[in-house]
Length: 617
Image 1: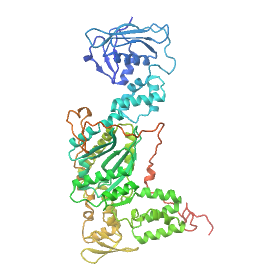
Image 2 (image 1 turned 135 degrees about the horizontal axis):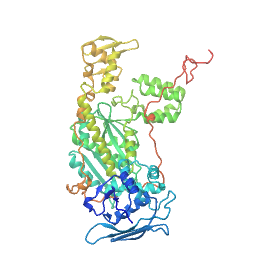
Image 3 (image 1 turned 90 degrees about the horizontal axis):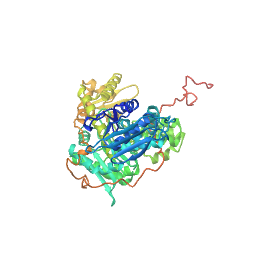
């Protein structure tokens, strides 16, 4: 009665086995090929399965593909019997384990169906486990695969309807099979830190647990390659920011990032903490201070940009007392905009922000006060010395906002469903990729300065031709224009307009002075803008880490806090509340300076120019 044919044996990957083949002869096929095979092939007496679970999964897959439901009559270590769930239908299969062999074989089979099968989209065999197996390959390639996409794809590919909860639980089960559980991730942290230090000598990796239950509290990671690149080649500028994680046990991701020669983000240190708190910020900055102190003889005087929360301010003042700690201009501008809700006031505010002299700044403040006297208390609360170009003492190299914010949000979005070790590995892979790509770019550059600096220098040289240059002595020059006169000192690299000092590159006045005395303006840029510095930034390598299955074999060690690797770290006490989490979307428009609103010079109304004014004279 039964036809001799191929046997499809499903598992993590489907396999095909001919009747009478042993397990060694089994060869794998893709999930897509397996579904096609299941729909086109029939069971046959003599087909073999690796074990009873494989047999059960295979019959379930065939039942779904051919749209009939089965009812299990018997299932134990030695036999498996199933029949069609419809009363009166003769379809039945008997699979048994033969003596002396590990495989199960179909002994008897009645392949005839007299029922109509499943006439709707709901199928009894479409369980959570089946969903997990069916979608495992796609979830491996795309961890962001959403439950609503899963249920739609299952309906399109298999003609079966599953609920949202089935799709969600199936994804959870598949993610656990692929990456391990959240709980396993915390247990692996001491061994993971050991592997970072072993494969990347000179790196800092430590994990801290708290309480009698050893609940996770903190993880700090900084690779030797990033430490070397920052100290030896980057400008002395750091960004501090954090993002709240949305995984099962929540937590917060901290990051201290530098800027390379070509204005690209350069993450220096990363930490995961159980909760954002003043204590955790104090610990993070303490670890940052230690790694810089160990790796350099003279600590550079840093400029630090952040949102200046209370915890950040106290931590910076404690561990970097000489640093210039300023506000991120995006944070300041959004606060000003939300406070006053006046576009004209916001435009004047931006003019005040970028004013190069105190006199120009105070003039803009007077204009704002004429519109609203509430500006004065706001300025008292947000001291201009912490953000205004005219007053801020640190050097920001034309870098005024936190570019690390968007990176942190991307990491949180891409990794929120991954255990903590897999999240850190995702970040390491991205850093390693950046190092490789940017080093290759640097090796191809033939100019003195990196492209972004070359562009600014070229613009300065182009503008320099409209100035009249009067030389006072060997190093001092008077640069005359129709607007004002500026004094340039090429020995001390100073211009009275302050742009050279603020941005690290010769301004147009400096370029005019340098050209007049036969000097190359490119050679007077700060060293942090050179191609040599760019190559040096990425000269070290972030080495790969072995698969976690090899960690124990490679030896045991202790974490950065002195704890043994075999310590069992448990998840933190915080848990994600039930329900769908609220999404905070970071819009790219908010990272940019708002567009200037046109104001009429005749009627002083906003929204049109003097040429288009329709008001009567």
